[in-house]
Image 1: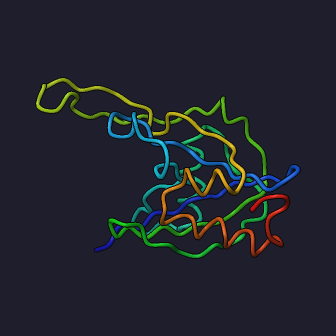
Image 2: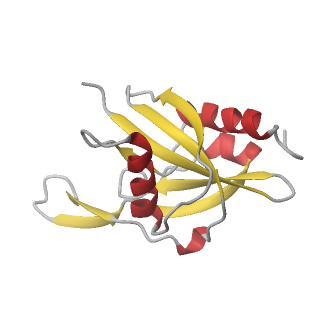
Length: 157
């Protein structure tokens, strides 16, 4: 069965639309930047409503609850086959103050030592041009879908 995730694309309107993206934590993403940022998202548990999963994951990955009008953005399929269903919400959050949950893995590999890492190691606000560069390529469509719902970009190309 294909894995499904649900997530929230938080956005704000300043002089232009900005998107809130997060960078995956842990050793596999430590030296990667462009193309690995993502919306806060996570796996939908069996019998769980996808929007409830999206809200839960946002809280777990940022330390902040998300409230507001949830605009459905539909689904995208990532390179490895995972389906991501997303909603957009207008809001604001201090990216430098996120507090993510952690996960534990054996690191270094085959060392027998377990280490704990933040699931999300940093977050940031990006205008459209920068967000398109940073975000996982499969999720770029979520940005353009949101812009079409809210009337397009302001002062961005």
